[in-house]
Amino acid sequence: MFLSINQKALGQKDTLIYIGDPMCSWCYGFSKELDKVTTDFVDLPLKIVVGGLRAHGTESFGSMSSFLHEHWEEVHERSGQPFSYDILKSSDLVYNTEPACRAVVAVRAIAPEKEYVFFKALQSSFYFKNENPTDIKTFSNIAASLGIDTNKFEKYFLSPVIINETERDFQLAITMEVQGFPSLLALKDGKIHRISNGYMEAAQIEKRLISLGFVASTDK
Image: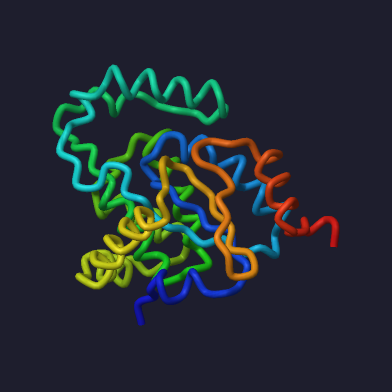
């Protein structure tokens, strides 16, 4: 059965909600910070909402090369994450983030415990390995590396249900009034609190979580 983030992810249990896009460079830079937060607050569930940074985009990487190169260098300098820039020479490859987002939602439906790991692996495949971020084979290979059956993954990825579910994620991000990616919200005692809007270091995030009454795993 396909899982609905509206039905499953935003229940009443205290939850950290991550709104991002696997093809968002600042989300890639943010991954180390979020890793630290999820390690320090290991008992706090993490739910992902894919935001659709450039969903259904039509511009090529080549046409955006100068802008993206400068932007990626800024993320590298701030976060230390490694980038490769050869993909920016492509005049045929379209910067459309919907397929990558949909791949994340497909993994969520098949193996929700592997969703975040898949999300990060997809980021690395794009930004560091420069693999095609719109090709189902790129996604299938990553899924296989995580022990997910590729036939099942591709069936889910192409399913109208998953396509619609991905669009629901995009709409959910809008409903949450997210101003930029990455963003973090926290569901605490049935109320939504905005933690971050854009890149933020783990220490600041953790300070805000503690101020809301969350307790780090190391302090329990």
